[in-house]
Image 1 (spheres, each protein chain N blue to C red):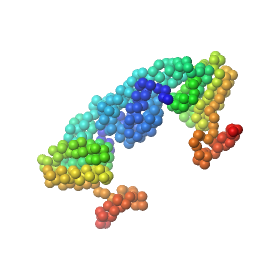
Image 2 (tube, chains in turn cyan, green):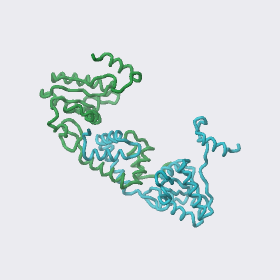
Image 3 (tube, one colour):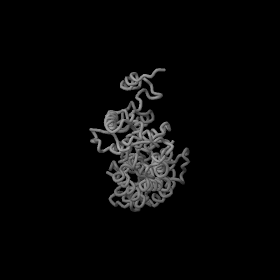
Image 4 (cartoon, rainbow over the protein chains, first blue to last red):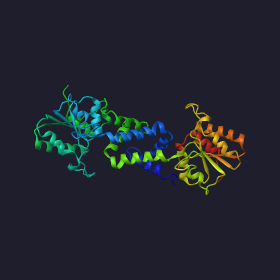
Length: 200
Length: 200
């Protein structure tokens, strides 16, 4: 038996649809929002509205920004001769956080997945080939997750890219994570790290 | 180094301020909202606005509803001679979910806490005494958490209530939770359950 109907119920359902939140945490958040209108509810509404109004996808790389092309695509201090392919914006943020990469990005919008029914036409592959074809790009870095879907996407992209251009195609190194303990690692990682061992 | 400024950053901060969410889950939610505007972002904005506009606190019990007095306070099929005192609306929902209680509620808005600086004036105690004083109430049930703060609040309320009325004051039973395993229970609960043992 539930006590509340109407707006509060709708809010709880809308919150529970977000990743990481279930009905209980959604209810807890909804009640806290309503008891802290000035400090929590109104700023959240304002931030959501502002975001909905001003943030859009970059036409070039697919990143989210207030302008299109986005600030990364406009940044002339970054190399335009390297394109890093990532699955989504969260991965772009992860690479950007390191500060170690100074090229351009291309966001696929996911990875190929037979289980989830995501095929090549659902990803931003055509626009990637358009960007690479003219020959202005020296290197394409496939920064995709080391999962089955991520790696099959990488293979598919390699084939497609090699059809249209002779650009250098690289992928992130596989191996022991920095700070990782050997005995907690899966066998696949250890085998890969052994095969790709580096000379000291 | 963070890539986004402006609205998206504000949204991530507003989301990260909610209970159970940190900066990472807030970013994940914000990006998902922006890639699912029709299905997630717009319904959430709508639900928040509707809630902010229509939901208010009941003047009598403190519950949240679209009308005041709220539907529980208006419900003439419920007994007006029993008042169940709860700390917050989440606790009211928990009691209501059971369907086992058919009286009225009074929401304190928290419990006394020296650590958090919450004193008697911060809780809805004065309005509780107003409700109980006329003598229309037979029983007050203290449905507060079995924590130190909850129990000291219960003692304080018992003293205050006994000053103004001779109403019967009860509290929820303490003991082994239904389905609970003895060897996982803390000693305090087992001692209480032993002391309050029931004849079969």
